[in-house]
Length: 346
Image 1 (cartoon, rainbow, N blue to C red):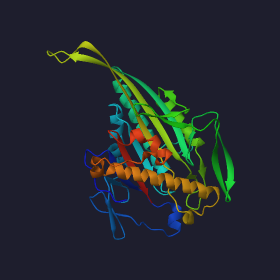
Image 2: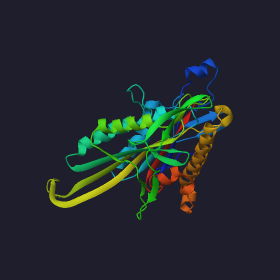
Image 3: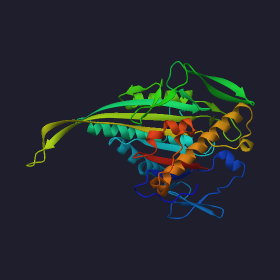
Image 4: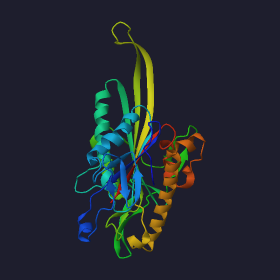
């Protein structure tokens, strides 16, 4: 998808992250096919050029700058009451789970979500004397267009073998979660687990628990391919005391009541787009791939509609209802919310 740099008023930003070749790819003689245009957020593939808001890795900006440039502003907006969404998009095996940090391994967490948690609690620490905070987290996955709760202790996962490959699939512990829309347009998940957290350690424990419950499977392109869209949601409620300011010395004077904000940040690790021929899938894996690609197509259509300022001004229809994923994210994609789409490339 070719994108031009978004203006400041555009609610959608698109960044490209190019991961280095892994050992197996080098052994197979693979070479980089994406080249970065010097000093520009632009890449070239053959004779085609594509422009983004940011490009990281393989000659672009350092990957370490991704959080500060793309995600930190969304965390700041959360404290102002703005919903936001961060999406990791790309083919299977391109490194989305690593970049987002939704994969837990040997007690080591890396990625954007741990950085979000650190920044969030550091900011709360500096503001806690003037504002009362409440934090909740939920962690769900969308597997074959069904919403599953990754924090539900009644749900388990079991190992199966499909097409000769080991796989982990979710076993529902209760009825499927329903997506509801309140009268004020707020999207809620009826029946999902929402955990109140007050420390970084408690939030990290929720991320770990959900990560270990996520459905995965093996394909020819990825030994541990994510077979679902995983959405880690942080909801921040804050009650801020309002005071009038003395005109003499700019100090707080009279108590003017309270101001309430509630906003949520969705951190989404999408299932990888794939071609059945390249992944070597069949049976269960093939059916999963079909659902994955249909959901990603619906998301792409929504992002395209939101990213086209001219069409937005003309009142173009945004097809949120075409998938469970876009329906769930509806109140955190359009309007005055902010979206960052991180395209993973390998």
